[in-house]
Length: 79
Image (cartoon, rainbow, N blue to C red; front, side):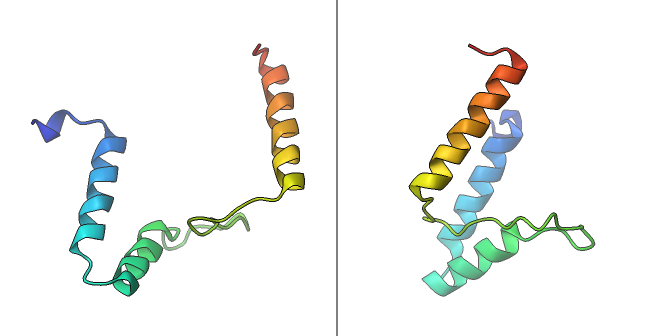
């Protein structure tokens, strides 16, 4: 297996899995995940936050998302 030929996304996923496996407990795994996904220092936040793993959206949010995606598809001429 030649890891040097992996695409970036595959390499990042493998690194995240390695961090998870190296964690001694769930608390350390959670701390690693928080550090991994926090914005870089000096980054101006857009006010959006990443929902925690396993977060659910309500029916209204899902319908709004579907409408937004349909509008975007229409704007780009997708079928």
